[in-house]
Amino acid sequence: MPCGFVTCGPNEALVVSGCCHTKPLLVPGGRAFVWPTLQCVQRISLNTMTLQVDSPTVYTSQGVPISVTGIAQVKIQGQNEEMLLAACEQFLGKTESEIQHIALVTLEGHQRAIMGSMTVEEIYKDRKKFSKQVFEVASSDLVNMGITVVSYTLKDIRDEEGYLKSLGMARTAEVKRDARIGEAEARKDAKIKEAIAEEQRMASKFINDTEIAQAQRDFELKKAAYDVEVQTKKAEAEMAYELQAAKTRQRIKEEQMQISVVERKQEINVQEQEMQRREKELMATVRRPAEAEKFRLEKLAEANRNRLIMEAEAEAESIRLRGEAEAAAIQAKAKAEAEQMSKKAEAFREYRQAAIVDMLLDALPKMAAEVAAPLSQTKKITMVSTGGGEVGAAKITSEVLDIVTKVPEMVKNVTGVDIMKVNLQHFPEDH
Image (spheres, rainbow, N blue to C red):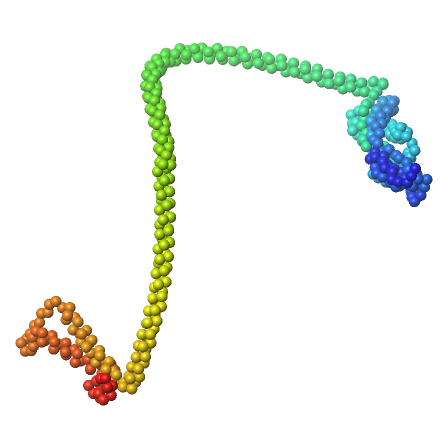
């Protein structure tokens, strides 16, 4: 055999021994590399084995012979290396039937031992306990061989002497006896209850007869009243029938009116749909063209607005240019006026009192005009004279002049300059 890998399925294990191995190499369900002539490869099955364990005619602890049949499932444990090694030591090279025979003999011995330690009643009534004991004892023994007891079940119990049948007959007799006693007691109770019931029936019959007579009398008395009531109810029923007929007719009329209302609603719905159709038609024939015309006019208005904006921008540009020109003119005028004011300020510094007088003389006519302004707006003046002075326009003129002549005194009080005493030689030549 050439050197290489050797494989096995999950239901068997490879046992490689020889060179390079102080103890066998165990490979459950896998592969191993093997050197031919230097190493030896063997296989051991890991399949589950079903064993029927028969123990005929075994005497129990009471000395009663019985036969028991159990079913056990056993297998060589491949996952535990120590158990697999022990199984290899015990069974390597043996066939599966030989392994089954060894496990069967071991299980049968333990089964017989457990049977001898228990009574028939214990085995028969508590089969679970018997199976558990056999399983535990056999497992502890077979595990040393590398075999695991997967399960054990008690299948059958037989008795050639009729002991089990006698147990059943005794129990059956007890049950039958209890049944007969119960039946007799039931019949006795039934008779007693029948007598009591008959007595109660007769008493009830007498009471019922009395009550029947009283009821017959009450019936006769009440029947007359019932006849009156029946006649009354009959008349009321006839009246109620007429009333119900009137109500029915009224309800029919109401339903007819509701039908008319529904028909009217349907007509209104039809009219509304027709109005919607006409509105859509109007929208298609009038509103859409009007909207198109509106859009055209809006576009024209927008174009016109843009034109006006452009014209306004051009006008603004023109105004800006004119404004710049006017600003230049104003700037030149302001410059000239500033120079004039500068010269005038120099003259004022040189001719202080004369300058003030000059300004007052310029302002005096304006002041006189302001004083006389209210008189120019007067439509009617009434003057009262005591006969000792002027009257008419001369009086008004003299009043105005009096106000004007008080101006120098007012200037003196404000500026401290007495214009009546100013030396006119300080005036410039143009004054």
